[in-house]
Length: 313
Image (cartoon, rainbow, N blue to C red):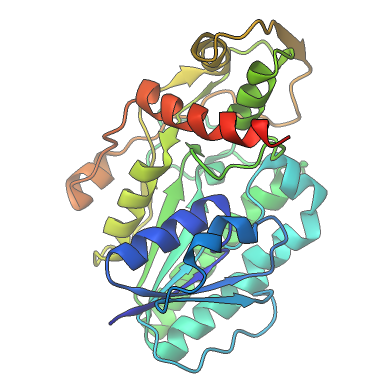
Protein backbone atom coordinates (compact mmCIF):
# COMPACT_ATOMS: atom_id res chain seq x y z
CA UNK A 1 0.00 0.00 0.00
CA UNK A 2 1.42 3.45 -0.89
CA UNK A 3 2.10 5.91 1.91
CA UNK A 4 1.60 9.69 1.92
CA UNK A 5 2.81 12.29 4.39
CA UNK A 6 0.42 15.24 4.76
CA UNK A 7 1.80 18.25 6.60
CA UNK A 8 -0.92 20.44 8.08
CA UNK A 9 -3.18 17.41 7.90
CA UNK A 10 -5.43 18.43 10.79
CA UNK A 11 -6.45 21.69 9.12
CA UNK A 12 -9.64 22.34 7.18
CA UNK A 13 -8.27 21.39 3.77
CA UNK A 14 -5.55 19.00 4.94
CA UNK A 15 -7.97 16.82 6.91
CA UNK A 16 -10.21 16.36 3.86
CA UNK A 17 -7.12 15.42 1.84
CA UNK A 18 -6.26 12.79 4.48
CA UNK A 19 -9.78 11.36 4.19
CA UNK A 20 -9.58 11.13 0.41
CA UNK A 21 -6.11 9.55 0.34
CA UNK A 22 -7.22 6.80 2.73
CA UNK A 23 -10.35 6.26 0.63
CA UNK A 24 -8.08 5.79 -2.39
CA UNK A 25 -6.07 3.08 -0.59
CA UNK A 26 -3.13 5.25 0.48
CA UNK A 27 -1.85 5.13 4.06
CA UNK A 28 -1.50 8.59 5.63
CA UNK A 29 1.01 10.03 8.07
CA UNK A 30 -0.46 13.33 9.22
CA UNK A 31 1.98 15.86 10.66
CA UNK A 32 0.63 18.95 12.41
CA UNK A 33 1.56 21.13 15.38
CA UNK A 34 -2.11 22.16 15.82
CA UNK A 35 -1.28 25.86 15.62
CA UNK A 36 -4.35 26.53 13.47
CA UNK A 37 -5.52 22.96 12.85
CA UNK A 38 -7.71 20.92 15.18
CA UNK A 39 -7.53 17.37 16.43
CA UNK A 40 -11.33 17.31 16.02
CA UNK A 41 -10.87 17.36 12.23
CA UNK A 42 -9.09 14.00 12.30
CA UNK A 43 -10.74 12.42 15.36
CA UNK A 44 -12.74 10.08 13.12
CA UNK A 45 -9.48 8.71 11.70
CA UNK A 46 -7.92 7.85 15.04
CA UNK A 47 -7.76 4.08 15.39
CA UNK A 48 -7.67 3.56 11.62
CA UNK A 49 -4.61 1.35 10.95
CA UNK A 50 -3.89 3.31 7.77
CA UNK A 51 -3.68 6.65 9.63
CA UNK A 52 -0.92 7.97 11.87
CA UNK A 53 -0.87 11.37 13.55
CA UNK A 54 2.39 13.04 14.60
CA UNK A 55 2.27 16.27 16.60
CA UNK A 56 5.28 18.07 15.15
CA UNK A 57 6.32 21.48 13.83
CA UNK A 58 7.65 20.98 10.30
CA UNK A 59 10.01 23.93 10.69
CA UNK A 60 12.01 21.38 12.73
CA UNK A 61 13.62 18.41 11.00
CA UNK A 62 11.05 15.84 9.83
CA UNK A 63 12.01 12.28 10.73
CA UNK A 64 10.02 9.46 9.06
CA UNK A 65 11.42 5.92 9.24
CA UNK A 66 9.10 4.15 6.76
CA UNK A 67 9.06 4.36 2.97
CA UNK A 68 7.00 7.25 1.60
CA UNK A 69 5.53 7.63 -1.90
CA UNK A 70 3.90 11.06 -1.66
CA UNK A 71 4.41 14.21 0.37
CA UNK A 72 1.68 16.86 0.40
CA UNK A 73 2.76 20.10 2.07
CA UNK A 74 -0.31 21.90 3.43
CA UNK A 75 1.18 23.23 6.67
CA UNK A 76 0.59 26.98 6.99
CA UNK A 77 -1.81 29.46 8.52
CA UNK A 78 -4.22 30.10 5.64
CA UNK A 79 -6.73 32.79 6.62
CA UNK A 80 -5.89 36.52 6.73
CA UNK A 81 -6.75 36.61 10.44
CA UNK A 82 -4.36 33.75 11.19
CA UNK A 83 -1.36 34.80 9.13
CA UNK A 84 -1.56 38.43 10.23
CA UNK A 85 -1.56 37.28 13.87
CA UNK A 86 1.18 34.72 13.15
CA UNK A 87 3.45 36.48 10.62
CA UNK A 88 6.76 34.91 11.65
CA UNK A 89 5.28 31.42 11.90
CA UNK A 90 3.74 31.86 8.44
CA UNK A 91 7.05 32.89 6.90
CA UNK A 92 8.92 30.07 8.66
CA UNK A 93 6.57 27.31 7.55
CA UNK A 94 6.59 28.64 3.98
CA UNK A 95 10.38 28.69 3.89
CA UNK A 96 11.98 26.34 6.44
CA UNK A 97 8.94 24.07 6.56
CA UNK A 98 8.92 23.74 2.77
CA UNK A 99 12.68 23.12 2.78
CA UNK A 100 12.26 20.31 5.32
CA UNK A 101 9.34 18.76 3.44
CA UNK A 102 11.30 18.85 0.17
CA UNK A 103 14.30 17.35 1.94
CA UNK A 104 12.08 14.48 3.03
CA UNK A 105 10.84 14.06 -0.55
CA UNK A 106 14.45 13.90 -1.75
CA UNK A 107 15.39 11.40 0.94
CA UNK A 108 12.39 9.16 0.23
CA UNK A 109 12.31 9.69 -3.57
CA UNK A 110 8.67 10.70 -3.15
CA UNK A 111 6.45 12.88 -5.32
CA UNK A 112 5.96 16.28 -3.68
CA UNK A 113 2.83 18.43 -3.89
CA UNK A 114 2.95 22.02 -2.69
CA UNK A 115 -0.34 23.51 -1.56
CA UNK A 116 0.16 27.01 -2.94
CA UNK A 117 -2.49 29.68 -3.27
CA UNK A 118 -4.20 32.16 -5.54
CA UNK A 119 -2.64 34.79 -3.26
CA UNK A 120 0.59 34.46 -5.26
CA UNK A 121 -1.25 36.62 -7.83
CA UNK A 122 -1.77 39.38 -5.23
CA UNK A 123 -4.18 42.13 -6.30
CA UNK A 124 -4.09 41.02 -9.93
CA UNK A 125 -3.76 43.29 -12.92
CA UNK A 126 -4.58 40.34 -15.20
CA UNK A 127 -8.09 38.87 -15.11
CA UNK A 128 -8.90 36.00 -14.98
CA UNK A 129 -5.61 34.72 -13.60
CA UNK A 130 -3.60 32.28 -15.69
CA UNK A 131 -0.68 30.30 -14.30
CA UNK A 132 1.80 32.28 -16.42
CA UNK A 133 0.78 35.55 -14.71
CA UNK A 134 3.51 36.60 -12.24
CA UNK A 135 1.27 38.57 -9.92
CA UNK A 136 1.01 41.98 -8.27
CA UNK A 137 2.09 41.49 -4.66
CA UNK A 138 3.11 44.03 -2.02
CA UNK A 139 6.00 42.24 -0.27
CA UNK A 140 6.03 44.61 2.72
CA UNK A 141 2.25 44.88 3.29
CA UNK A 142 0.39 42.99 6.02
CA UNK A 143 -0.66 40.25 3.56
CA UNK A 144 2.89 39.90 2.24
CA UNK A 145 3.88 37.38 4.90
CA UNK A 146 1.53 34.80 3.36
CA UNK A 147 1.83 35.82 -0.28
CA UNK A 148 5.61 35.88 -0.27
CA UNK A 149 5.92 32.72 1.82
CA UNK A 150 3.96 30.84 -0.82
CA UNK A 151 5.83 32.50 -3.71
CA UNK A 152 9.13 31.50 -2.07
CA UNK A 153 7.78 27.97 -1.50
CA UNK A 154 6.96 27.71 -5.22
CA UNK A 155 10.48 28.88 -6.16
CA UNK A 156 12.03 26.40 -3.72
CA UNK A 157 9.86 23.57 -5.07
CA UNK A 158 10.96 24.26 -8.64
CA UNK A 159 14.62 24.55 -7.54
CA UNK A 160 14.45 21.07 -6.00
CA UNK A 161 12.76 19.76 -9.13
CA UNK A 162 15.43 21.17 -11.42
CA UNK A 163 18.48 20.60 -9.23
CA UNK A 164 17.69 17.33 -7.48
CA UNK A 165 15.36 15.78 -10.06
CA UNK A 166 12.57 15.51 -7.48
CA UNK A 167 9.07 14.87 -8.85
CA UNK A 168 7.08 17.95 -7.80
CA UNK A 169 3.80 19.69 -8.52
CA UNK A 170 2.21 22.95 -7.39
CA UNK A 171 -1.52 23.41 -6.73
CA UNK A 172 -2.60 27.05 -6.72
CA UNK A 173 -5.66 26.78 -4.51
CA UNK A 174 -8.49 29.31 -4.79
CA UNK A 175 -11.06 30.15 -2.09
CA UNK A 176 -12.29 26.81 -0.73
CA UNK A 177 -15.24 26.31 1.62
CA UNK A 178 -17.11 23.50 3.34
CA UNK A 179 -17.31 21.51 6.57
CA UNK A 180 -14.52 21.87 9.16
CA UNK A 181 -13.95 25.56 8.58
CA UNK A 182 -13.53 27.37 11.89
CA UNK A 183 -16.22 29.84 12.96
CA UNK A 184 -13.65 32.48 13.81
CA UNK A 185 -11.06 31.91 11.08
CA UNK A 186 -11.76 35.32 9.53
CA UNK A 187 -12.82 34.19 6.07
CA UNK A 188 -16.01 35.39 4.44
CA UNK A 189 -18.15 32.25 4.28
CA UNK A 190 -17.77 31.08 7.91
CA UNK A 191 -18.19 34.67 9.12
CA UNK A 192 -21.33 35.21 7.02
CA UNK A 193 -22.89 31.90 8.09
CA UNK A 194 -22.18 32.49 11.78
CA UNK A 195 -23.56 36.03 11.68
CA UNK A 196 -26.62 35.09 9.62
CA UNK A 197 -27.52 32.03 11.70
CA UNK A 198 -27.43 34.18 14.83
CA UNK A 199 -29.29 37.10 13.17
CA UNK A 200 -26.30 39.35 13.77
CA UNK A 201 -25.17 42.09 11.36
CA UNK A 202 -23.33 40.55 8.40
CA UNK A 203 -20.02 42.37 8.03
CA UNK A 204 -18.64 43.30 4.61
CA UNK A 205 -15.27 44.96 4.26
CA UNK A 206 -15.28 47.66 1.59
CA UNK A 207 -18.36 48.14 -0.56
CA UNK A 208 -18.74 44.44 -1.38
CA UNK A 209 -17.97 44.84 -5.07
CA UNK A 210 -14.72 42.88 -4.80
CA UNK A 211 -15.05 39.42 -6.29
CA UNK A 212 -13.98 35.93 -5.28
CA UNK A 213 -14.32 32.47 -6.85
CA UNK A 214 -15.46 29.91 -4.29
CA UNK A 215 -14.95 26.17 -4.72
CA UNK A 216 -16.54 23.45 -2.59
CA UNK A 217 -14.12 21.25 -0.65
CA UNK A 218 -14.93 18.00 -2.49
CA UNK A 219 -14.15 19.57 -5.86
CA UNK A 220 -10.91 21.02 -4.49
CA UNK A 221 -9.73 17.68 -3.13
CA UNK A 222 -10.56 15.93 -6.41
CA UNK A 223 -8.41 18.42 -8.31
CA UNK A 224 -5.54 18.06 -5.84
CA UNK A 225 -5.63 14.26 -6.06
CA UNK A 226 -5.59 14.30 -9.85
CA UNK A 227 -2.61 16.64 -9.83
CA UNK A 228 -0.77 14.49 -7.28
CA UNK A 229 -1.25 11.35 -9.37
CA UNK A 230 -0.20 13.06 -12.62
CA UNK A 231 3.27 13.74 -13.95
CA UNK A 232 2.65 17.50 -14.25
CA UNK A 233 5.32 19.82 -12.87
CA UNK A 234 4.13 23.33 -13.70
CA UNK A 235 1.68 25.17 -11.38
CA UNK A 236 -2.01 24.40 -11.87
CA UNK A 237 -4.93 26.56 -10.74
CA UNK A 238 -7.44 24.50 -8.75
CA UNK A 239 -10.49 26.71 -8.37
CA UNK A 240 -13.96 27.57 -9.58
CA UNK A 241 -14.10 30.02 -12.52
CA UNK A 242 -17.58 31.14 -11.40
CA UNK A 243 -16.90 34.65 -10.05
CA UNK A 244 -19.17 36.26 -7.45
CA UNK A 245 -19.04 39.54 -5.55
CA UNK A 246 -18.67 39.49 -1.78
CA UNK A 247 -21.96 41.42 -1.56
CA UNK A 248 -23.77 38.78 -3.61
CA UNK A 249 -22.32 36.00 -1.46
CA UNK A 250 -23.54 37.72 1.71
CA UNK A 251 -27.03 38.09 0.20
CA UNK A 252 -27.06 34.41 -0.85
CA UNK A 253 -26.21 33.27 2.68
CA UNK A 254 -28.75 35.59 4.34
CA UNK A 255 -31.42 34.23 1.98
CA UNK A 256 -30.37 30.58 2.46
CA UNK A 257 -30.48 30.86 6.24
CA UNK A 258 -33.73 32.87 6.23
CA UNK A 259 -31.91 35.32 8.47
CA UNK A 260 -33.04 38.69 9.76
CA UNK A 261 -29.48 39.99 9.52
CA UNK A 262 -28.69 43.32 7.91
CA UNK A 263 -25.48 44.03 6.03
CA UNK A 264 -23.00 46.47 7.59
CA UNK A 265 -19.84 47.84 6.02
CA UNK A 266 -16.34 48.32 7.40
CA UNK A 267 -13.12 49.65 5.91
CA UNK A 268 -11.42 47.44 3.33
CA UNK A 269 -8.19 45.86 4.65
CA UNK A 270 -4.87 46.92 3.14
CA UNK A 271 -4.01 45.18 -0.16
CA UNK A 272 -7.28 43.23 -0.24
CA UNK A 273 -7.59 41.87 -3.81
CA UNK A 274 -10.29 43.54 -5.91
CA UNK A 275 -10.85 40.51 -8.13
CA UNK A 276 -10.11 36.80 -7.99
CA UNK A 277 -10.99 34.32 -10.73
CA UNK A 278 -8.96 31.35 -11.96
CA UNK A 279 -8.38 30.42 -15.55
CA UNK A 280 -8.62 26.61 -15.28
CA UNK A 281 -7.78 25.76 -18.89
CA UNK A 282 -4.64 23.95 -17.76
CA UNK A 283 -6.56 21.81 -15.23
CA UNK A 284 -9.27 21.02 -17.77
CA UNK A 285 -6.75 20.06 -20.44
CA UNK A 286 -4.12 18.20 -18.42
CA UNK A 287 -6.16 16.80 -15.51
CA UNK A 288 -9.56 16.46 -17.20
CA UNK A 289 -10.89 18.26 -14.13
CA UNK A 290 -13.36 21.01 -13.44
CA UNK A 291 -15.71 21.76 -10.52
CA UNK A 292 -18.86 19.64 -10.43
CA UNK A 293 -20.69 21.08 -7.40
CA UNK A 294 -22.65 24.30 -7.89
CA UNK A 295 -22.34 27.19 -5.45
CA UNK A 296 -25.98 26.72 -4.40
CA UNK A 297 -25.45 23.02 -3.64
CA UNK A 298 -22.17 23.63 -1.85
CA UNK A 299 -23.63 26.39 0.31
CA UNK A 300 -26.54 24.16 1.34
CA UNK A 301 -24.12 21.43 2.45
CA UNK A 302 -21.99 23.98 4.31
CA UNK A 303 -25.06 25.49 5.98
CA UNK A 304 -25.87 22.11 7.56
CA UNK A 305 -22.40 22.02 9.07
CA UNK A 306 -22.54 25.55 10.47
CA UNK A 307 -26.00 24.99 11.93
CA UNK A 308 -24.58 22.12 14.00
CA UNK A 309 -21.43 24.05 14.87
CA UNK A 310 -23.33 27.11 16.05
CA UNK A 311 -25.80 25.03 18.07
CA UNK A 312 -22.85 23.85 20.17
CA UNK A 313 -22.08 27.43 21.11
